[in-house]
Structures are given as C-alpha cells and as structure tokens.
Length: 126
Image 1 (cartoon, rainbow, N blue to C red):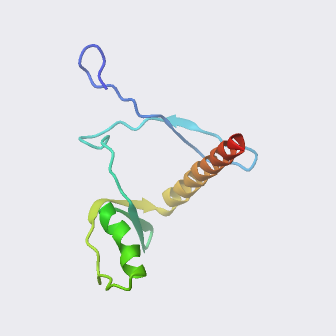
Image 2: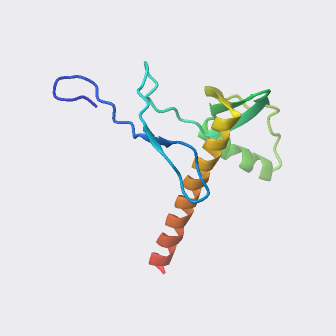
C-alpha cells in the first residue's frame, strides 16, 4: 500500500509482546517493518519441526494440492503409493524455545477464537 506521495506504508498489524501473568497480560506494541520481500505472503500446506539444542527449526512447505487429493484415492483403490513425495520448501524459520512457547500461546488463542466463531455460526443456523 502506498500513501499519496508514492511512499510505501506499513500496514502490518502491531503485535503485542510482553510477559504474561496469571491475572492478565502486559503488552507492548511492536511493529515489524518489512525487509526486501518479507511482506509477501508465503503459501504453505505442510509443516515439519526439527529440534536442535536451543532451537526449533520450523519448515514450511508446499505440496501440490492435486497430489494431496490423489493419495487417499490411490490408497482406497489399493494402488501403489509413492515412496516419497516431492514438495517445495517455502521457508525455514529457526526459533528459540521462548519464541516457540509464545507461538504456541498465540496459535492456541487463534484456534480457540476460530472454534468459538464456528460454534456461534452453527447455533445461528439452527
């Protein structure tokens, strides 16, 4: 997105960071500014974790959706499954254990919100 002068604006949402407490959370606004093409989304439909001393490597990959859809059909029909599937590594992210714990909390909140929204939508249809 650009402003009226052709200058690129950062429209990334501010992330809340800070130590969490049992009674509530203390947060500090943090804005991550893009570098090179880092603001371009990466599509991934596969993840893998590799643990190393002090770090967790998260691999985000992409497997062709046609291949993913064909595998169950081939298995049901008794066909031969491939020994390996080729996909593309979209990104590899190395995280410290503290960042993994924070990511776990954030994903938990997202999933809880999605679950709540789905249950509300189901109740409204009834």
